[in-house]
Image 1 (cartoon, rainbow, N blue to C red):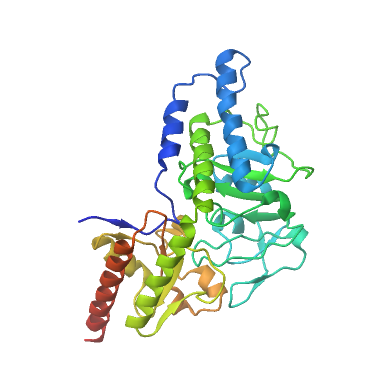
Image 2: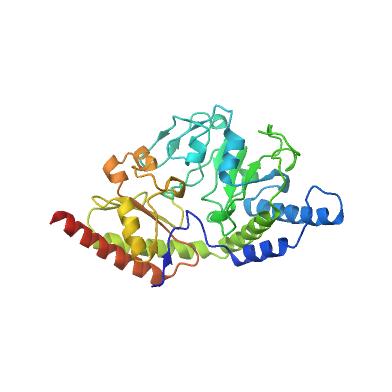
Length: 348
């Protein structure tokens, strides 16, 4: 049975360019902080990757601070600040913000004072996009990066977080973007790496993979790969809606990421859908991967106004450039068959 991977918002397959860059970096033995030739070679890898990530994000290289991932980037930016957020934010943001901002049923967040607020660029569960205001304190750009054009330098945003493994890079590396001129206090001391903002010897192998993945993602976006993904996503949703009653596609008529469908089928629990589809050879999820194992209604969907029962019956299907029409057709057929069988058993 050939498996079909439809969980790109959780993590992406490693891009070939990223793999090659990491293999090459493995032969570089120097510490990037050392001044000898070996150290300079390692430093060159870090700075090349910094330029690649910066270019893909429309930022200056000096604004890119490498971290262990987006979660750490969120911590560095938000910890110790009284920043307002909304319940639809990722747990990595909600852990360090005052989550009192109102959310409309459309997914739009009502900001009070942007300079004291955090607002995600795109939601990982629903794909719903936000309009990021000038002078926003912080944005989690993790899901939007690589799928939608971003220009950090023109945005007016003070800080933002991104992650490598969402764009075909390795897990365990990300970046915090800090706008030039913004005061930033390091959260812990050490050797003063990353321009004094994040101490610790740089993970040059993963950073090399991150830079290569960012460059490849930028090229993929320019080539229109995600427009093709949107067409497949729309075909999938149309097929599901035409063949299934009482189905909800969250945010269907709103601006969303081109690859994301959040599907609610009342009476069929999300975790049950995930298990049944897994046994049929399809990888989907019931929400954010960082919330896996937690059998509860999605806080994102309840914040959008869905009741707990509906929110617990949602499944997220997220496509990628490698997804084919055959993959989508197979998924639709299996999902509809499983739904019919499950509902008949419940009724009888």
